[in-house]
Amino acid sequence: MCGIIGIVGTVSVQERLIESLKRLEYRGYDSAGVAGFTKQGVERRRAAGKLKNLEAVLAKDPLRATVGIGHTRWATHGPPTEGNAHPHRAGRVTLVHNGIIENFAELKAALAARGRTFSTDTDTEVVAQLLDQELETKPPLEAFKATLDQLRGAFALVVMIDGEEGMILGARRGPPLVVGYGDGEMFLGSDALGLGPFTNRIAYLEDGDFVAIDHATARIFDDAGHPVERAVQTVAQSATLMEKGNYRHFMEKEIHDQPDACQHTLSAYIDPVSTRFAPPSGLDLSAFDRIQIVACGTASYAGQIARYAFERLAGLPCDVEVASEFRYREPAVGPKTLAVAVSQSGETADTLAALRWCKAQGLTTAALVNVHGSTMAREADLLLPTHAGPEIGVASTKAFTSQVAALTALAATAARQRGRIDAAEEARVARMLLEAPRLIAEANAAEDHIRTLAPELARARDVLYLGRGAMFPLALEGALKLKEISYIHAEGYAAGELKHGPIALIDEATPVIVIAPSDDLFEKTISNMSEVAARGGPIVLITDAEGARHAPEGARVIVGPTCDPLVAPLVYAPPIQLLAYYVAVQKGADVDQPRNLAKSVTVE
Ligand code: AGP
Image 1: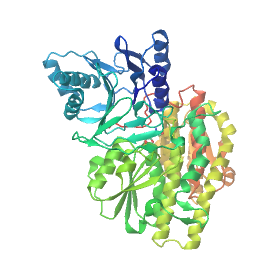
Image 2 (image 1 turned 60 degrees about the vertical axis):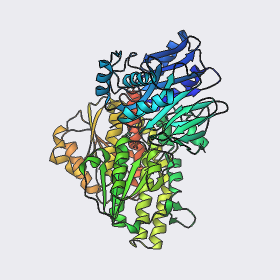
Image 3 (image 1 turned 135 degrees about the vertical axis):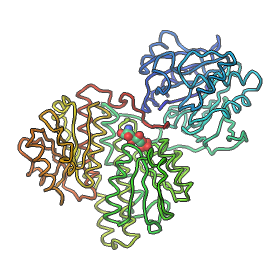
Image 4 (image 1 turned 180 degrees about the vertical axis):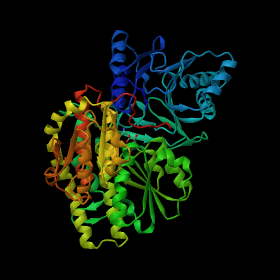
């Protein structure tokens, strides 16, 4: 979603705004803009499309200011044109906004009735007009509070007011906003990553907070307008780093980061010396009779994979539901249910709402998140961290495998705490999980071969992914990856479902990717592959050495390491990610910032 930044600085702001916006690019956007207080008053520069277009505008017409705001826009109301790009301006107000103003239509009508005219299709301009109207009768902070009180929806705002050259205002209702503390300079931004080049001293605003920054201070108020303190934390250097090293894309780097990401994550759940599971926050899973996982997209597939482990290994019933449905379904949940929100960002609007709903029902809630200062992390009763490091590619890779690793470790913890496995079995499972990072690295060895398969797949219009058991949700994830970054239509199916409908789609032009390491279901999957082969469907089989011996004639085979089914979803994730990656590269697609997608979906 949109990225926002505000700088009350002492040196030229234009380069800093662009540098910060580049760091926020990963969130997804389709236009961008900046504004600053210049000697001539507030000036704006905006452009549709990528940041390079805005840079070109600034090269011709620099913004000579030290205090300014910037924005990358992911269009919600109105197309991604220069005119709809932020910052928006009305009277004395210039502002940028992330999120949605739900009551913008009624506010717009009321403002129009009072003679205000609008020049954009956005909901954002309504906020600028409203604040400008409030400023006619109130001082800035009072006017800002009065404006916020009239807005409905989930949003973050960063605002400049003419005549208040040393001050920037910010507000948070839903999407995150952080305050950065510099040396004689202050910052506001969507996340710590965006402020990385300037400071790593960060305060996270609470939901409902608003703030005024100047060169030296941040005055923070809660939603009732009372002054509040928010702790200033020094965030780890790693949380502000974003380098792709020698890789062409962040996604490629992040695929290769997975052994480390999983190892770091597992070290938070397993004591490697004693090979005992030691869950964070002292979580006692024997106190629960059911796990309810809520998540969106890739995170929900991680949850679906974990369900197999929770039920098979720990005998603990586990439901997984996409948060956007869960939150409105009024599900029946028992008091001994542990609700686990799984999210890379910890900010996804639907997942956060589902978490809050569970909390309101009195359930114990846990946030399994990669961003440890995120809203979910702070609101849940328990933080279950993944340690994947910042994930910049919009298509989730290392965050996904880290989620699977953490959830699998929790399932094993539950098995031990519920007396389903003894100490010897616990140690065996722990060792097996600790081995997984090495196997993930081994799986990457198929990369060169996978690259050679990309040209043929890149010509396909439709691709099917098949899997059984925990490989079924991995098939769903494989299809999502391909769709997201190569724009090829792809669907994942449980292999056994093929003959109940999807088989009608099979022809010579529809490749079928089968994810099937040789486990106790492998023979059944061979039958499904034969059904595809009999109808001329090209097959790519992702399997281990044993499975490769049974590949149907003519199938392309990607061989991965031999491993236990419990860790197979981790070990077989890199091949499906690499396949999607190289197909997207082959098609010349924008791998790290696919069209229409946002990294963190902070609106419904
Ligand atoms: C993954 O490739 C996607 N971009 C998307 O499905 C993502 O996993 C989903 O939006 C959930 O995000 P979260 O993990 O930050 O909550």
